[in-house]
Image (cartoon, rainbow, N blue to C red; front, side, top):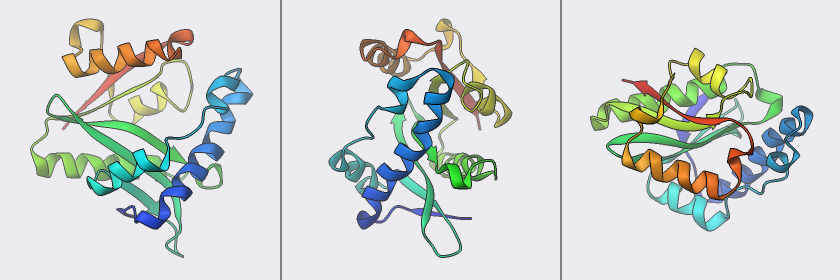
Length: 168
């Protein structure tokens, strides 16, 4: 897989990838997450224009996964990473995370952060295998606290959720 920046004409493909990747939440009793709509094209465009959006592309250069990030408290924060189910379990998500880690290191960021469901096998347990560690409330930065408050207001705390950090 080749990691590269998202092209402006590929933004609808990111939505398709996220919808396909989200379907597996239905199988574990989280249909609300499966049915959640991806970010609007305008918001995805902001990530693309800020050079904070990447895809993993197959041999035909077609996107099969994507990652978007924000800058939060001096770190790069994984806002969303989604892998199309047809390309899952091949290290594609890990490659995108490693790509972001290299970018963060070049920028001088000390860590990657993210928020995730703690009991979903392809969430917190997966991220732990990728070098992330769970943060307790005392380890949350102001920006991470704000993200968690926003997630709670959206109802995501119906399922156990936490912040994670990967030191670089």
